[in-house]
Picture 1 (cartoon, helix red, strand yellow):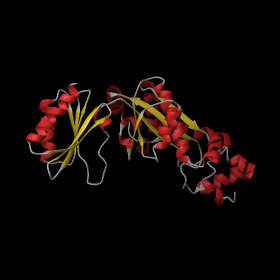
Picture 2 (tube, rainbow, N blue to C red; picture 1 turned 135 degrees about the horizontal axis):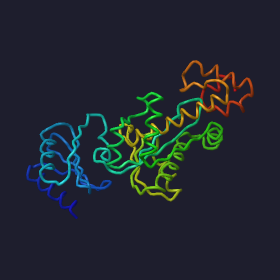
Picture 3 (tube, helix red, strand yellow; picture 1 turned 180 degrees about the vertical axis):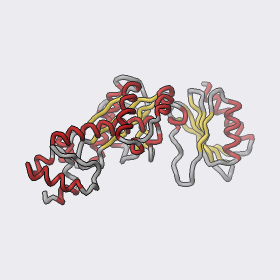
Amino acid sequence: MELNGDMARLAEFVAARGWEVCQERAIQHGRQMKISDGQNEARVAIYSTGKALVQGRSSSLTDELTAWCSTNLGGSVSRTGASERGPLPNPAQECGIARIGIDESGKGDYFGPMVAAGVYVDGRLESVLTNMGVVDSKRLSDARIAKLAAAIRSECPHSVVAIGPARYNQLYASMRNVNVMLAWAHARCLENVLARVECGLAVSDQFGDESYLTRALMEKGRQVKLEQHPRAEADVAVAAASVLARDEFVRRLSALSQRAGIELPKGASDPRIVAVASEIASKGGREALADYAKLHFRTTGSLGM
């Protein structure tokens, strides 16, 4: 295979320079080599697409490895730095590898649903979304989110799964773990997207033990490699999922507000939340509140329920 030949030639170059190959391993769609010159370390990932990614702090080691890849490999070469403490970047994002980004909204909001979304992105769609200005929904206004969400829905295979407050409270009563519920919703999104496209990689934020999600996928007969990254919303696939999830949350919260006859505040710390919750509860008690709020939040206890 050409990929193995590329890695063998890289190993020869490393040996000729007097450096050390610390590790070589298979990665999604390619192989990765960890290299040390005695003072610095770097990782070189070579993908079946012909692209390469050099990761590591700026040094003569990364300079020479980047130059070698540019000269000896047929595809483009990307280079990313790494801080002393931070994780190395997501290779899928750097090299345009097809993946499904998954994210959620409403997990920390007292009122409204919890929503998960999955968005399929390949190299072409990554460029489309980047040119649209898709970024983490936390950096966008509700109006901008609505416009971007409409564009994402028209361009990308996607899925949105919403768990309304009433159903949320039922599930929490039996599961007693929000991350298990979230993993179920993420797995449902992935299953729906995979019904439309073939993809072997999913990327999400690091919300908890990934075994929750992998177990949920296995129960559905799906085998997908899951990569969890801190601040995964920097990946445009995850950012697109965050936009869809937030748009669905905002629209459903608005519908619940109309049903309640009072504006339901976002978040969990707005000083209006207790007053609004108290007003709803005064009309129908805990059962009425369960149709609008996540009852296990501390706010419910502050109402004496």
